[in-house]
Image (cartoon, rainbow, N blue to C red; front, side, top):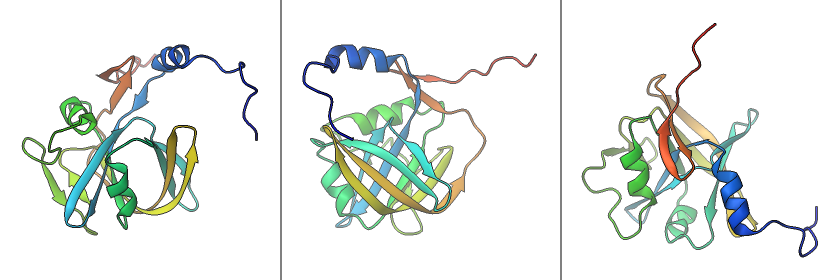
Length: 170
């Protein structure tokens, strides 16, 4: 596949506004490298394959957290619950200790930080990465999964975090 000829792509502003109408789930990716926890919020999380079990997310090339995540031998995907907007905002912020109080977490079975009260944890081994535009596609092989409950997900829509409301059954 090749890039579109110059002048055919929409502007960054129009593209950003068009994508804002699409709601997405919110996860926090965590890892530990050199004895220090690292993590970031991602709204680009997706399943990739059932066999083998693969998931993916994108991270901005300019991320200051990415070098620590990349160097780790595994990472965790923490699927945030509907009431965890503050957690998502904290892990999306710069210049704060994301793992300090009030963040609640514990080391996972392989050492990656697992956030408390999330809907699910997926522990992943790095599988593949690729540079795509101004982001890096990260694919992980899921080696452990823990469901914490059937709760409602945290969503990201039009620049804000929100909750899912199901349609009433007919």
